[in-house]
Structures are given as structure tokens and as C-alpha cells.
Amino acid sequence: MIVTPTDSDVFTALAPPLGPGVDECWMDLDGARMRYLRSKSPLLAKDARNGAPSTPLILVHGLLGYSFSWRYTMPALAPYATVYAPDMLGAGFSDRPAGIDHSMRGTAARVLRFVRNLGISSFDLLGTSHGGAVAMMAAAECLDENAGLSSGMGVRRLVLVAPVNPYSAHGRRLAPFIGSRFGTALFRVVIPYTSFLFPYGHARMYGDRSRIPPGTLEGYVAQVAKPGLFEHALSIVRTWSEDLRELEATLPKLASIPTLLMWGGRDSAVYASSAAALAKWFPNSRSIVFPGIGHLPYEECPEEFNRALIEFLTSEKIRG
Image (cartoon, rainbow, N blue to C red; front, side, top):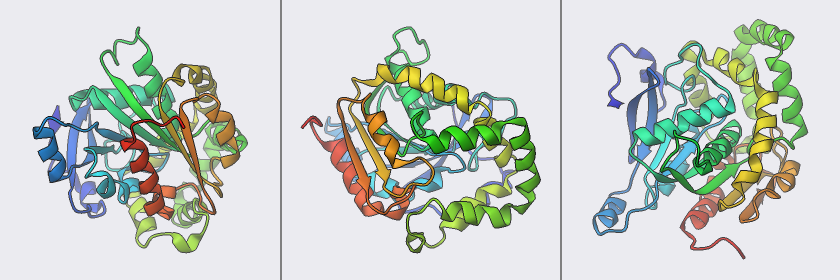
């Protein structure tokens, strides 16, 4: 069910301005209100009327990210596909309901319910960081003939941008520590100091801090005004180790999906050195590493990122 924002949602007014051709939309999902952005070129709509519809593209953000992450991607992709970028429940300006399943599998199921509510059956799926792991789980769900949720749904192509995976040593240590009882208690102690820590952590996501686009930090901090963001993050890392084990067991199911792997060569969050081990599970794939770039290539080198993404999504074949 598609809904409109309520007048009482004062936090949405704090969201960064939308780019040209990008619409803010709302959906009732799992008893909560989910915000998502949509972009579509008028020329694309004309092509669809002529019988040549494109495949929709779903963008899944990472931990502590939201649809703001895709402000350079959505306008560039609009001429080629209708693009949807949700604020996953708990993040951005969507509702933050307590007690929902934030495991990778639970979040993947929510992505598929979102897609089904849009009336979409076949789609391209892009996920970054934690959203990349969620995208892999969602794609595997679509391939499971016994999964009632994804019946009739299919991922045409998969794009993984520095996805959380079982082969990055950094991710195997830090997130489980924060999710532990001691780590969670320590995290809650430092939450009042996020005005200092958030800029520091954000800057570390870039290979070259001089390439941080103006207004980026302010855009990410804007969502903090809506209470519950950090509790949401804690609920994600709490099942991190179990999620990685389940993800590794799921990887063999994904071999048939054409996949693009993209990484920044100076990624300090999910090491680029893990790309080779992950790529072994995707025989029909391409891998791109952007030299000198950090964890957010769609922000740090958006032109190169968009060019590679468009080439992949519009190409007839990817084996070569």
C-alpha cells in the first residue's frame, strides 16, 4: 500500500533536498511507514509505452546510510531504468519500529516485500556494504523454489559495492564486538558524543578526504534527529557473526546470476582484498577496483562509478 507522509512527521522536513527528477514516496510496510525515493526519466516512460520497458533497479543502502547515499546515482541511472531507493525501516527517515528482525535474512525479506508492494517481479538489485550482504540474501531467496515470499520474483542482475562478506577480516572482528554485551554497553556510553565521533567515522570511509562532496556529512547527520538510529544499528550488529555464517552457506546458490563487484582500493571498512575470495562464487561476474577510493565509490568517484554501472546494466552479455 502506497501512503503519503503524515503532517505530524516533523523529521522528514530535515531530509536533504531531492535532486531533479527524484520523487519522495511512502509505503506502509510491516505495520510501519517506509520512505523511499524514485526516479524515472520522461524518455524512459515513452519507451515503455512503445513496448520496450526497462528493468527496474533497487538500491539498498548500508549500515548508517539511507537513500541520501544515492544522490549521484539516481539522476545518472534515470534515463536507463526506474530507480527505487528505500530508507530501510530503522534508517533514514523511515519509521523505527522496535522488535523487528534486523538480521540479514530478515532485512532481505523486507526488501522483497517492498519490491512486491511496488508491483515488480523482475528487477536489478544493487546493495552496498551491509546492504550488499542483504542483496545477496534477497537474490538467493528469489532462486529458492520453496520460498513463498519470492514466488514469481527474479533478480536479473546483481551489483555488489564493497559488500559485507565472510572474507574481510575487519568485518569479522569489529561488528561482532560492538554487538556483544560489553561492546553494546560501551557504544551506548559514547552515543552522547556522536557529534564528534560521527564526523571522524564518516571521514574514514573515504580514500581521500579532499573528495568528500560538500554537504555530505550534514546529509548523513540529518537522520540522527529522528530517535532510534543507533539502537537500529546495534540490532543489526547483534546477529553479525551468525549472519556471516548463513551468508557463506548461501553463496553457492548465486552462481547463475550475472554480477558486478565494485570496490574502492583504499576501503577501510570492507577490505578490497576480500573481493577475490568472494568473486569465486560468481563465475559470471566482473570485478572493478577504483584505485585510491574508499568505501563509498558512488560518492567519491561518482562519474566513474555510474559509467561502470550503466555499462553493466545495459550490456547484453557479461562473459568475456
